[in-house]
Amino acid sequence: MAENKKMSTAEILAAARAAKAAKTEPPAAVDVAPAADTPAAEAPKPAPSKPIAKPAPAAGGRPSVAEIMALARAKKEAEQGGGAAAPVEKPVPKPAPAKAPTLKADGDKPAAKSAAPKVLARDTASILAAARTGAKPGPVSKADAPTRPAPVAEVATVVKAPPAKLAAAPTLPSKPIKTVAKKGADAEADRRGFLEMVLGSFMATGFTALSMTGGLFGLGLARFMFPNVLAEPPSRFKVGFREGFPAGKVETKYVAQYGVWVVNSDVGGLQQIYALKTVCTHLGCTPNWLEAEQKFKCPCHGSGFYKDGVNFEGPAPRPLERYAIRISDDGQLEVDKGRTFHEEIGQWADPDSYITV
Ligand code: FES
Image 1 (cartoon, rainbow, N blue to C red):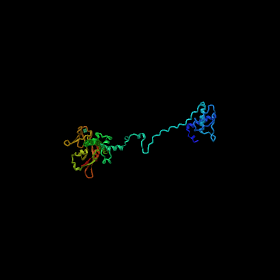
Image 2: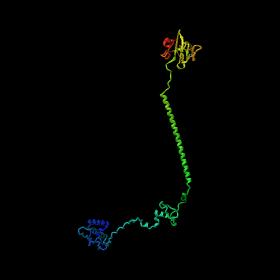
Image 3: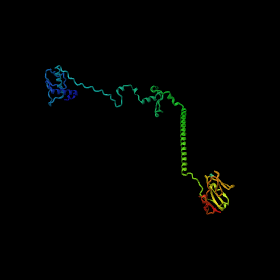
Image 4: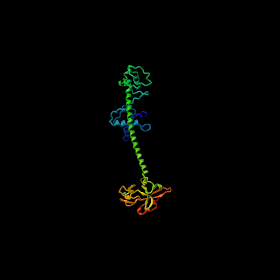
């Protein structure tokens, strides 16, 4: 049984198929049951007509796999015509797959590569070491710089000499570089200055325009809040004591400020002081007092008025008007322009329109 376990899967499957076929078709009797590991050449050659003997059952009454396989082979040989039984081929062990070359613990490369010359397996450390010992200076760390060994001619062939330009680079004069850098800095400073100047100009212009706009707006607002108001003289004003107006005198010094003539004259046999309005009754011009002619003469259309104000020439339709006049508490004469008196309607007879002397 221990040998039976060594059968391959193909053999086991073939035996199973043979056993299944044997069940459906009873095999011929075989004289001797071949052992499982016995080659077919050594087994007795069964005659083609001979019935194949049924293999003896195992001790347990159930044939083993090897017995089933032997039975199957015998049946097959009998079917092929009873020729010499071909030797049972042993299962050819499959060739073991080629294992990949295992690397050793020390990290060696595969055998094929390890056979290569060691010169090709140069690492950075070896290259640096060779460079340090070369004729031309190579890369070296700061720590190794003071202890740099003398150049060796052999290693010099490994390390390439630096290009001529690179070797000559450290000897370049630094003055031109500084000059170029200085020129670049000056150009940058000039550009910045120009930009700052332009920006400052724009900002100054903007702030100036804004200030002017704000000022104009403030003026307009002030004009709106405080409009023009005509400073008119008060309607009542004092012109002095009555002694300042002698008889027959026409005072003209209040014309420009108050528009009033203060006259001391005889009107209808009564000496009076009254205040005449300096407005022509024609179209509103201001007549002039002509002392030589003792009349008021309008320059616009030639109307003429006597000293008492009655019109006598020109287009003026009616006499001049009077303002109310009275003696104030302090004894001065006070004119009230809030009240007027018209002669054509008899208002000059009103005592408020004159002061008796
Ligand atoms: Fe005085 Fe015409 S306005 S005469």
